[in-house]
Length: 432
Image (cartoon, rainbow, N blue to C red; front, side, top):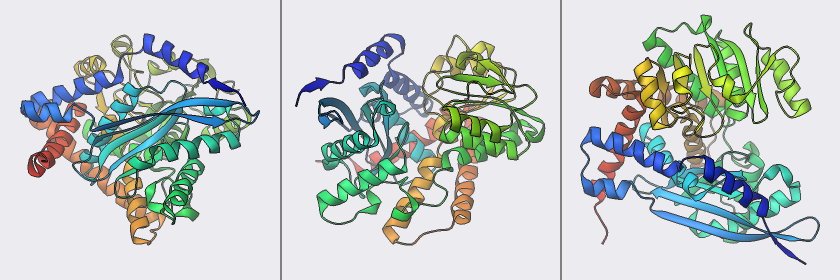
């Protein structure tokens, strides 16, 4: 048996670190802007601008050929003041500690802005799961779960799917945790298969919640969805669902993309045919009834609604001046930089920030957790109606805050969220 490091992941990581800004610095900069609006004390700034716990693990996995590779993984808990921490686990070759810390902080604000009794957490493993067999993927998941097991639990920290993870991976995580504990614990994770205690409506929750937020925003900016055009960057779970649901409201989806590139048809795309094409070929690229565009070109196409549903740092100071959308709904986490926010605000673009626009996923994860603790399932109609009420109420509260302080929606969402978490911190005090 020979041991080999996962050098490919490390090489990809080095490239990313040279080209991308430190994502945690971006998160802290956004926090500072909102803290200034609130007049937050220096003590609370120091507490809330740090992650509470940071776990890094290096663990071996036996591959199908008998070799062993050592992978690096993380589980970060930003703040447990509001309750158990909550956040997804992503498998990606470019995962970094700074990225996971930023995502954990954003999860704290996301849970707070929609009023969930959670703090924020996030996890990740540096791996390209597309290069692994199902057996290797299961071995990696079970070993990673065992490494982070002291950190997680149904009343401590509840993982969920994220980039390149899915209900099957959550099933392996739940089973591994349960086997190690000695009894079944369905509440240790959300996003599970329904037969194992998953929730109806969970797979569509992020995209559906995003469209609910778009409906609320369209009313305040007087945008007729039935006469609008939509562009979606990222045709994965969140992006494909958002595209389908916005099309059902009458919007013409003119462009979509995935990691390999994008397609554009100003007359509108046949989304059902695009979905079949991607299932057959692995990508939207090459779809016959559309022109090819890059992911960068897609962001600046003529459109009314832009839904970034891919990765971080897509809208920057470089391309923000050329964006033509009047409404941006961030289905992805961290797709816009603070510099881009300022440019878009000055241009009059209405931005639904990630911690509001994509909060549908964690909201329905909360529903799943509640159902697991009660052992009482809800119908998909009940789930969707509860989600609509929460997204509508949260939008109204954030929009009111934006009007009150004369700030853009991201700062308004952060102001509401940070104020709530700061109140928890003040009331609980410092132990000992």
